[in-house]
Length: 600
Image 1 (cartoon, rainbow, N blue to C red):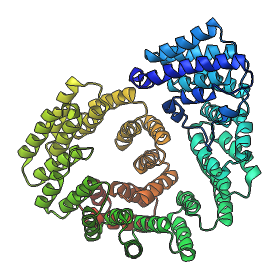
Image 2: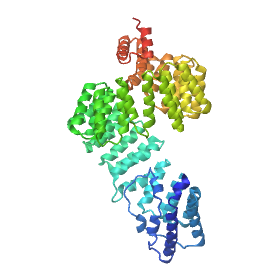
Image 3: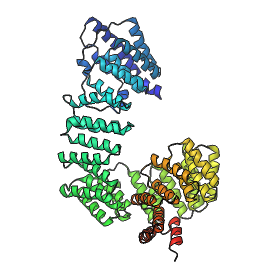
Image 4: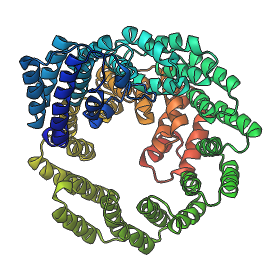
């Protein structure tokens, strides 16, 4: 692939190479002239330049055209090395091309060659050479805005923030610069820097020179949140709002920070903004979404109606309202708005059909569900729609027909066998044919013994058939293949905690999972559960309350209620259980907990 991408530009590059040779020759004869600048500019690999994703940008002219180019004798050695670099690129050897250009740039210190060396190195993903080439480019032509941008971006990518600081400061202060946009781009550039505290310090130092810019305060706030300094984030985002009170992005960010500790506080902040700026569409959408998460359905429905009244033909608004209605289980409103989208110029009609099929399923209108799934056309939604089609067949009692449907799909889509096997295993699990599902996945693993998805589902079924040994061995294989698989660590840790064995090991596994996915409420629930098993009830309640606030799930309700009950908070425990049982009357975990503590 690398060779093919590189070869797309070969002819142009070789022509430009000849032009460049002429340009160098001209420079040797006429010092200070820029006759070659246009040719060099034309030879820039646009795709490579685009790959400088972390480079904070501002519009630049062809600043090479105004650079004072060095006296450059066109020696046989320079010509040979230049053609070597270009031919290496033509033959797909981007690494050799980058190294040859870098060596030539070091020898000549010509900014045009250094620029080319930088671009080719970026294309070849040779970050160290790209950085050194960019340093040469900047040293040879410190007045080039593009050289400053690229060097600063590469320094940020390498985590060398101290060296990047003066370059960024100059960029922000340059004539014609747009510092507001640059601050917001900088935050994105810093997202991959590991030292979040250093990133925050850099943003604060840069922002000190631009205290009147609301974007600088929002950028500092975002860096502060990444560094887990919520106090600084709130302080800075509020400074941004003082400077620009109607700025929705700042208000949404403040609500995001507040939501970490209190959803009601976040809702109140959005409500205050709407009182002052009632036409803030994105704020109202997020306000409605937050109301749904707090189960304040009647209030959320009022917000839906306001949005639709203000934007009756806006497909994005209609779609958002439909999804919010789905989230609040208001299926009639959701279906009405989704059907409207099919008559409008909406970008993702297959996605709409998927949602309509799910609504029909929920309402037990199975023929309608089958029709919607069958209307999904080829594309990324096609396979999920066909899997749902099989699930509806199974719900109608046609398990054999559903499995045959999946088998036919596997024959047509050999590259999708794993998701189709997993779907078939789920059909069997739903039909309480757990042993057959277990055997099916075991057979699939014979052909793909290290597939993490097959291993994970096989482990989950192993627990159902009392094969704890297979559960543990399979999960450990998943972790070996995918060491960043948070749910694998969590599954093994929770299994140990639930069986009340090897609790220290269980806690260590769940701690790893929590580091990998700190906002996963099921993992947070697992931490609460293992702490309860270890007798640390007060700490357990903190985790379980956080998990339940984020996801009021039946199993989390069962866990939280149990810990509260044994801690003496029986009235609260009973209320949580009763409320959850009304929403999830068929949940086995909750039902079993109620039988143990509230036998009736």
